[in-house]
Length: 453
Image (cartoon, rainbow, N blue to C red):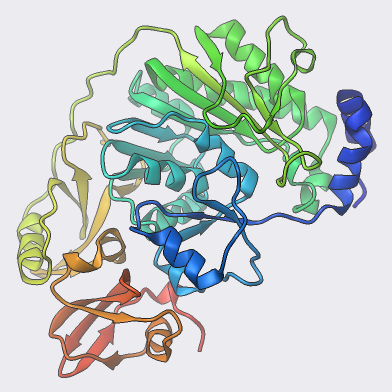
């Protein structure tokens, strides 16, 4: 791996006596991959470790483990059932820095593909609200799929610019995540294309873009709220200098990130400012088992309160009635909230959540319940993954290594003595729907997720 000369010169100046160790790590250290256990799935950590054996813990993330992708596949039933998420180990530090509390309204402003959003959603649990935004439509769809797979009920997925959201939601969120687009120096080892695209000028232009994004984020942060800012780059222009910019231009203070004492502190001299940067955190590959990363946690000292935003009016007609009929017949649990119908798609916005999604590009307006079509209701994959085995009146369970489960995951019909809609589970964890009749379970596992025969 040949690194840009200007990059090497800058890192040598920054790290001084540590530079040789840094350069050796960049060129020879093993690449690290990780999985994060989904806390929304009961006893998921025990199930995953039983399946794959003991894994080394990632010290800055509860439920984070180093893992070999050659051994743990994305096609494994536990991954398809949302028990774990493949995530860059260093990236898990961002949400770990946030003091997430029950009933928080959380915004992930640059959320795709969903690692940090799903991590925040799992910590939030079933209370509060998660808004996950991504400006690129194709990436927003991937984000939505990952929200679905992890069984998060109280999430709204949006495809908007930060500026548009700032107009819509002033002083609305308790916690905001800004994992900003950056020059990607921390990913040089994994993404050679980042080296080809790198220039010193690019780090400066990224810094300007990051300031604009943070300006929108600050308009949406309530008084007393917290904003965590992170990048996967080493460049001070995108890290400490951005933190100094925030301290100069907003009424905020830096807070030592929660549970990240094992990471390196930023340095004042890297910020070219008067501000102490010791409360920012960095991950260097010669000091930690992870790629380059930067984290800064800001506390908003303003006293503004949450904006009172009117709820969007429900567009439901017969959708709730159709769902309730399905619920009474096939589920043991009653879901409450505001029902929203977009075309044929029925969503459930969590009860008590006040967020106006009118005239906003919405990908997922809460939990996708299913499709209302010609006087009947067809449940969604999202609904299945958001519920537990005991929530279904009909279920059929298989072990991870079951040949019958493999047939189901490939889209084939299987034998079943139930009748009507039935949840397929793997060792008790929901993985998809089937519809049973005459001793056969018609397959409703999503076609785009099916394993190749």
